[in-house]
Picture 1 (cartoon, rainbow over the protein chains, first blue to last red):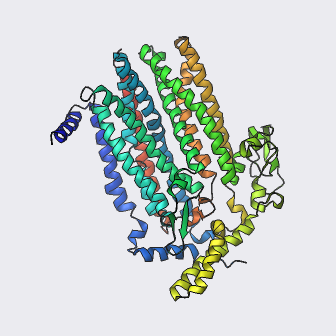
Picture 2 (picture 1 turned 135 degrees about the horizontal axis):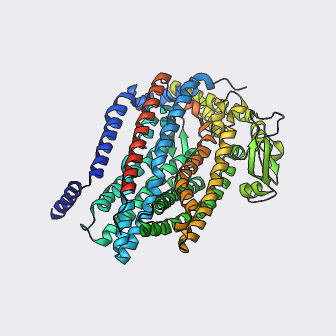
Picture 3 (picture 1 turned 120 degrees about the vertical axis):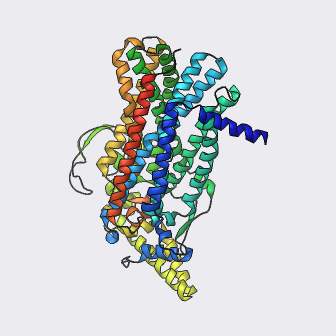
Length: 75
Length: 511
């Protein structure tokens, strides 16, 4: 418990005593992560196969269909 | 067949991935290289206890931190793209790609995330030894993260240790060690990470050179240059050696890429290596044009490098496209037939399985597996589709190699001048060192262009072409996200450069 408290205080002290530039960097990191996970991932980068609401077997069939459906007959 | 997915969609998806990968790679090499330089400096401070080394370590650690903070998680966007834009590919590769990336995530989290906090917050808070070791753990953790990504990429260039399950349409890992220790993975990892050390070394040298030019922090700059130049020289010599191993591996596993790297259209015994060359514009396979408007070749060297035998035959583009029976090289037209047979029997196998016709399913499976090595060729419209962009591959490769040798020379000359305490008088050299920083980034990006453009049209060598890897999305949606990424990454890059420049202008604490 004492070790955990020490680790916790270590991080708190570290964050408290950061320079102005370090704080600026944290703001950039947080904005970046927000844009990536709350905007890009949610609205623009949905998992294509998950969005089709297929189970595992149907996903396999979908991909096999994609891979084989228009293949020309071999000569 | 190649037109079944709109080619503009393929091109935009490809452009988007290239954009994000190139931007991501602007941050990574400095993290990989600078982390080790900081660890070396920190070790010197730990052993000597001298304040000047503390200031040196603190300053470069700060710049490392800025680059790390801005670059962190930019690679995750590539993973978003796998799920959205490249769903056929993501499903097809199965756990081959998932396992290394999962290990990478865990390693990055435990090593980098844990110790980076100790590294930055630990001054006078933890023991000096633990603090110094944390710098090493950050460096090792960063480099191990790169290992798993590069293993996954190497598997795409040389798919080993897997088995394709025709019922699930996924590759299944048969032997983890075959994937991890394939020569392609080993050479790729060593060549890529060590080349990143050159970026880190030149970054330290270039900025230190700027301080000397300005007459500021001379002692700091001289000591920083000494560490970085030794590190950079060792790294650049090692990169030349690993580059040779990588080229040998390419010759064995991706001969078309090697032919493109060398602009070699007609295979030769005692093949020469192009030292300098200008390609003939609009050259096509099997036309009558000379491949070069001008070239200087080093006799026999390409055979020696590619096959470890000066008399060996090195196949050219024409041999690989149209076949060369004397050298046992099959024509692509034959491989296309095999591929179509394999694809057709994958379809039949699954149909027979659904019908419960196990006998016919087994027959189709046997034909499918017999021809699986040429599976991807079944998607080509014509044999020439397997030729990558030769000029882009050729010039990228030769410029990268030329820069690699230039860096060796720069590190040697820098060390000579620093050792003799003459560097501060050589203004031209100091300016050249400053301007060498972007050259290392260019060389690093060129390496990826050679690796990725040179292996086109394949996502997975011989098995899955790029055109079959993409999701069925609207082209406009990919264009929109392309623009969004371009803006986001450009803003991040500007932020990084501005914060870096501010810190550099502020300089280290006076020694």
